[in-house]
Image 1 (cartoon, protein in one colour):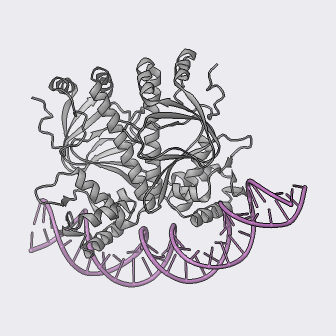
Image 2 (tube, each protein chain N blue to C red):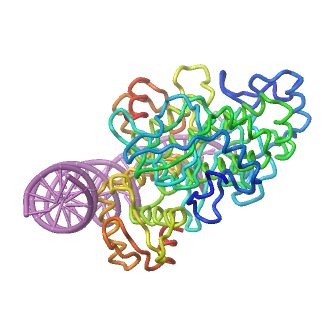
Length: 229
Length: 229
DNA sequence: CGGGACCTTGAAACACCTCAAATATGGTGG
DNA sequence: CCACCATATTTGAGGTGTTTCAAGGTCCCG
């Protein structure tokens, strides 16, 4: 049985395994190593040689870029089932840090590229994941360029609803990241993020249980604000 | 002789032809159709089926996304040698409009994908171009999330210096796009863009000949501001 | 030379940021 | 299990940068 069997990716989500036969999954298994990382540790660093690709099995990661002046931009939050390190350049374009304790598999880039030649479906999946990653980046550009603070927060909440497992209750979201992380993702300060949450609560669009647990009350309005169109 | 011979791409820039033999270039030629577009016309529309890929030969294009409320985000300005439409999804993720009269070649996606199997170097080029496109998007996310107005304008000027042909004079830039286009690229209003240019002129970092022709006076300071780090 | 589109500049409004302080949260050891 | 502590979050007040609204100027093309 594949080591990937117990992966907690959201249902219906595209992964590198989508549509692969049991035998093909085993070929991938043969190349893979399972590893763990503690919260706060780095999976990889920007500008280091891109020699591995990864698939997250459990926990949450974030992809980030920092400048010499200490400005930090979070590029994505990464949930189980997501694929990491598909950069087609020689070096990674970003760093990846653990938000929680994580479990993931590691595959050497070269072997992974070769395997794509043997498994056409795998190549298709990688191609489509690449497209999704670009689409995600374009969404973020649109959000940062055109949306107001509270709309950006809605944008994030919608993404988290799609990608994080919804534990039982409908519309409940666990925010494993800090306000600082959210601010660095949305191009805002922690204070503005906090006020945006307060505003959404006042408008009865969300309910804030604790700072790290919110529930969507009005999905329609949330989506409308998230799209801002 | 290849129809691509007279392509005016910037020297040293990666194109899909980089490192291809004459014979391989001819295989690409055989699939290609040359077309023209007038200024203001659309090359392709968001959400339409992605059936072709394109390479720009002459002129300038811009890649954009619009929302129903009329908000528009420019994702990139496209110069000769650039490759368009590499989306790996079924539909285009953006629209592409001409800023000037343009000349470009069109290749059916399916045939282009097949040809990559026959020409390993072509596949490498496409992979790397995909990586560059993602890197460009991440740069833009960082700029929109972390930089002030005048820093974003420097960010754009640096990009244009790299990508647009520098006609004779050193550091001279032709801004073929309007202030509105620039604003929609950088997430600013036209007034803020205008004031940012005025500020850079006052600080003697650039000189503004006409609204659409600027010259870099202090390259070092420009780069510093563009990076904002 | 005239006209329309584009660009610049000014003043006021607004959103977001900065600084500061109070409050809440989560983990730890007693 | 509770009290405590460090850390994270919220809230308030004031400042800054960007937007909005409005007017005037410039450029380009017929």
